[in-house]
Amino acid sequence: IPLLRRSFEATRSLGSLTVVLAIMDNSTRIHGKRHPMIAIVTVGDCELLILRRLQGRMSRLESICHTEMQRIDGHAQTPLQLARVDDRIDEAFDDSITIQVIEKGSAVHCVSAYEGDIVVMGSDGVFDNLFLDEVAALCNTFLPPGQSPVPEAHLARLAEEIVRACHAKTRPGANGQYPDAPIGRGGKKD
Image (cartoon, rainbow, N blue to C red; front, side, top):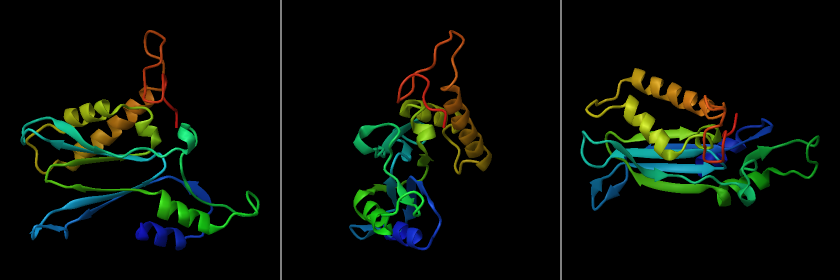
């Protein structure tokens, strides 16, 4: 949260955004032993999914952590956001409002990290259109077990396929029906 606050305070740009930030922390110690962790901060409807091979190195990737979206009053089109606007938009706006969102509205998670974990970070464009099991299935298709480290080209191909799958949810299928998505048939085009 301090990093996010310092970043906001170091900018003067106008606009709004949602945030997903993850930092690998290799300095944590549990019972005197080094224990890598992933620290996660989210604001709004960006999300993060961590997948792990729970049944051994040759097993399928399974979800072990998923952040929740933060939307105002639960409405799909009103995510919590960090913002800075000028007098043209809101004469009463004060940066302290955004500082308060960062300090009191951020969702914070700390998760143990293990070799082979896959972290998928995305905007609402991903997680409004794809169910978690669909994201996991794509990861299992493009990241088969037994590859360590995972080749960069496989990660790039996976990212492209996730975007393609999101776009496919916004188009009717051969039967003329829109596919199901977490926010309803046809997902969101953004």
